[in-house]
Length: 131
Image 1: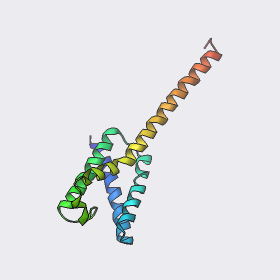
Image 2: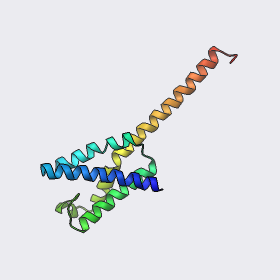
Image 3: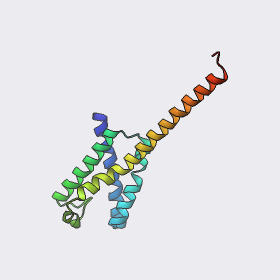
Image 4: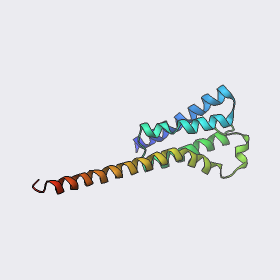
C-alpha cells in the first residue's frame, strides 16, 4: 500500500510541478495544462502503473484540486473552476487517462508476448516430437 501511495504522490507532484513551471514561465493556463498532460505520459512508461495506483492517482489529483479550489490558492485551478461542479471528475479522469492507456498497452503487450511464446513452444514440439 505504501508503494501505491508513493507512486500516486510522485505522479501528481510531477504533474503539478510541470504545470507550475510552465505556467509561471509562460503565464498561459492552457499551455501549462497541455504540457503537464503531455509530460505525464512519460511517468507511466518509466514506472509501470497498476490498477490500484491509477485509482489512487485520480483520487489524489481530485483531492489536490479540491483543496486548491477551497483554499482559493488557484495553483492548479482558477476562479472559473468553481462554476463547474463536475470539474473534480474531469481532473481525476484527465490525471488517470495517461496511466490507464499505458497500463492497457502494457497488458496487451504482455498478453501478445505470452501468446507468441506458447505458439513458439507448440511449434518446436511439433517439429521435434521426441523432445
